[in-house]
Image (cartoon, rainbow, N blue to C red; front, side, top):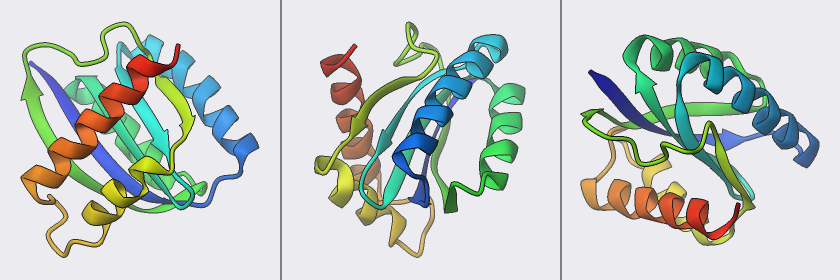
Length: 134
C-alpha cells in the first residue's frame, strides 16, 4: 500500500536554498519512487509526498533534520489507491502569497493533524498550483 502525507513548516530557506531543494528532491524522489508537490510562501513550506511508506518515512526523517526550515508538522497521513501527482517527482510552482493563510491556519493549530477543511483547502490549492505551471 502506498501513502500520502502533507506537512507544513516554518521556512528559513533563501530563494537559492529552494532551488537546491527542488533540484535535489527531484533526483532523490525519482530514485525512491516518490511523487509530490512543494509550495513555498513568504514564511512557510507545505509539501505533499506520495509513495511507498518506507520511502516516505525516510524522507520525513531527512526533512525534519533539514536546517532550511523548522517546526515541521505532518498534518495529514493516509493510505492512497492512486497518486495526485503521478507525473511529478516534485512539482514546484514558485512562492505563493495565496497559500500563506492556508498554511498558517494549519500551522497554528494545537492539534497538529489540523482541521479536515483546512487540510482539504491546502491540498486543493497545491494541486491547482501544480497544474498551473510546468
